[in-house]
Length: 486
View (cartoon, rainbow, N blue to C red):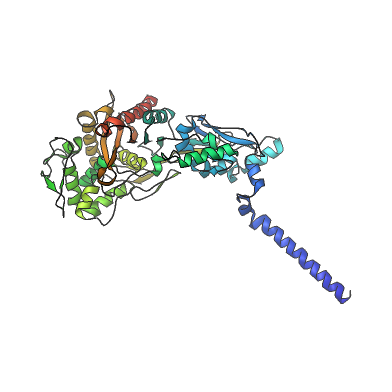
C-alpha cells in the first residue's frame, strides 16, 4: 500500500473509532441525562403514551387518566375531588411538569422505576400495554372530607396524624385548586395555571406543609412540656411563682392576660385551662432560651420534615434575651409553626411522649398491587418522659372539659386540646389566626391528633378565636377517625 492510501486508511479508521466512542458515550454515559432532558420530545411522548398509575386512598383511586384532547400526548391525568386532594397529590401536567407526590413518585407512577423492570419486560412478550405502579397513601378519606368541608370558603389548613405510627390521616388546605384543569397541554391549561398563580389567596400553596404561622397560645403546651422536663415544676396542681402584674425582663411593659381569669400564681393546669400569658411567659424567661430551644427542637422545630413532600421548618429562635424568650414561649415574637408541626407536637403528647416520624405513603405497588416498598413507622424523638406526657394530657383534657376548648368535646371520648388566637401583623394590626390542637383517646390509646388553623378575613375581629372557629373543625376530623375505629 502506498503512503497516501495508508494515510487515508488510518484517517478513516480514526473516524470510525471516534464514531464508536461517541455512540457508546451517548448510549451509556449520557443515557440517563438525555432521558430526563425536558426538551427530549420522545421521552415526553413515551411518558404520556400509556395510563399513569394511581394515588390511592381507602383502597380507591383518587386519580385517573383520560385520552388527551389534542397533540401527540395520548393520555393526561385526571383527579377525583381534585381541590380536596390537591395538598396530597400535587399535580402532573403535560405543560407545567409536576409536584408533590406526583413528582416524587413519578418513576413508580409512569412505570419507569427499576423495580418495575420485570413488568415492563413481561409486557413486551405478552403484548399487554405498559402500566404504571400505584402509590397507596395513609390518608383517611372521611377525615379529609371533614377537614376540607370544615374549612369551607375560609383560608386555613388542617393536619391530622396517627400518634402511634406517625401516619398522616388528613392534610387539607384552603383555598385550593383543581389539578385536572392544568393537566393537559393546551393554552387553556396554561391560562388556568397562570390564574391560580396570580390569585392573591394563593390556592396552589400547601398551607398545611408550606405556610408557617405564629402558633399563639397553642405553643404553651411546648412551654409546659419544657417546665416539666427541666424540673421547673413537677406538680401540675401546685401554685406557680407567677405574680400579677408581671413585667417582661429588661422592659417597661407588663405581659397581659386575655379575660378576667385566675392567672396570679395559677397552677399549670389552671394556667393552660385559661391560657395565662403571664404564667407561661415567665416560665419561658425562667428556663431561658437554651432549655426552651432544646424542648422545641425535640418536637421538630427548626428542621424540615419530608413526608415525603417537604414541609417548611417551623421556627423557635436561638440567642434570644429573656423578654424575647418569654414572648416566644407564648407563641409570639419569632415563633412560627406549620399545621403539620403542631399536629406533631400534639401527637407526641398523646403518644405518652414519643414522637413518631410523620409520613403519608403507606406503600408503593406494581400495577397488580403487589408491594414493592412499604413504610415502617419510625421513632423520631422523645420530647417528654411518659409521666410528664401524661400530666400534660391531664392539663389538655381540662382545657376541653372546663376551659376554652369545650366545643371540641366528643361524647364518650376523652379529648385533650389547646386553643390559640395568634397575633398577626405589626402591633397585631391584622385579623388574628385561630388555632386549635387536639387529640382523641380511647381505651386502645389515641388514634388521632389534629392541628387546625383558620385565617378568616370575613369574620369580625372579636369573633375570631381558636375555640370558636377551629375547635369544631378538629372535632369533626377526630370524629371521622373514631368512626372508622369502631
